[in-house]
Image 1 (cartoon, rainbow, N blue to C red):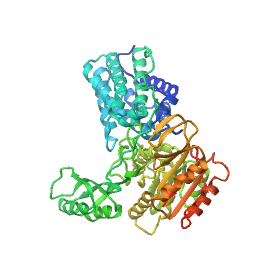
Image 2 (image 1 turned 30 degrees about the horizontal axis):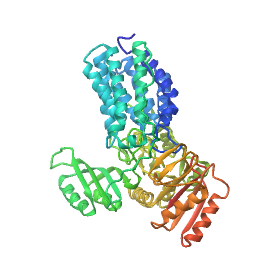
Image 3 (image 1 turned 180 degrees about the vertical axis):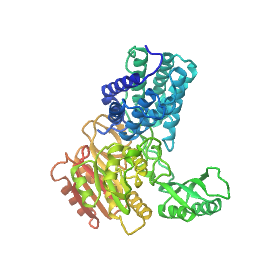
Image 4 (image 1 turned 135 degrees about the horizontal axis):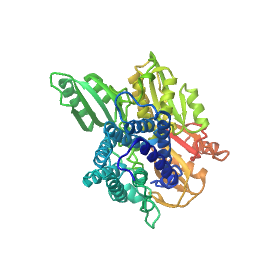
Length: 570
């Protein structure tokens, strides 16, 4: 039993937590709202904590000269390793929880119960701050409940406080379906919260020497899980635009008037600076013309951290928070300050040549990677860590880089890499592409003769104008908004929502293309997957030629896993 948490105990906690996550990795992966074979929260948490453990093992023996305690140094190594190795929303948020613990306990001589309670509160604050729009019923609720229980224990008994925090987290996890309708509809608890409960149980084991009484209970009704309905924003306006702005009050007054004529849901808030001086503002608006909204910001002052979200792409997912609104706060353009301690000064070796540009694109599939490479992009394999994306950004040797993540989870990781790149003197913009077909549309309009910010806007607009669909086989029995499905049924998802269920792959692919073209379109892009049957693209192309003779079709072997066909319509 421990009365305080030292560096050795931090290492044992990491090892024990990683073992627990690996043991329950498949179970957490299956806590997926959608009956498709790509749930990966458990995998992302394992990869993130593995990176944290590796960072701890490499540098634990070298204490910094700033007076940091040994246990504080260990926690900071964990937080840094988790940040650079973070995979998906869940991994990014876990890295921020570790950072909150490290920031609080780094200067505490001994970690007793009250110190741990304060650290859990700081971890909660850091986790919420990492999310643009916090949503209850996620890992955020679980860590907040743990912090509250630890504070209410009001004791320096480390064992009592640890048990209180872990018990409250378990109870909060069981309540997540009551807080988030998407989880209740799917019959699952929050996947990221489940992972955090395992880590807190591991901490109890390290501190008390007692094994947890059993696995944290996972609420599952007898009925099959459902597919959640994705919520959308304004029905009149298609895009949400948000950015930070350095500008004087007088210019912002004009900006408000301009934006009010372009859309709705307008919110402009400042940091309380003097009216006579330039102030930092947070600008939010729903519009149809993204370029006009950003241009209005340029006319008013200096906009940065520009975020463009297409409402049709929003998903209420079980991994921590819905995407994209509730992802860890994005860094589309270079931030003025980066997270402290993330990149050592020794790594700030060179500043890329001014004016040079590059694109970094995430691709899952050899054929897709070849397509992006032909467009002059640097390609990173699917589900990268923040460190891998940062390496790719640095390898371009460009001063300005656009990143196309092609997946909601990877957007969070790309934002971390963008913040890291800023410390290297690289300006990085993340265009929130959700499918490779959107990235192809974005790269097609790239123009190095434009200003970088204008080029990013054009790429974001092109990606947003490209509707996408995915065709796969159901991995389990479920009730979707399109009706019930059984394992092996063919599912056609349009922009993340199940629209069609069929028994024949070619027929279902043709039907989903018809549905998409019914809303208009001049160009269809087809990417066949690694397990696509021979002749699938040709059969769909022939159907389009007969049914939609004036529509152009481009078909390529994509090689992506899970999805025999990806479709883009522009």
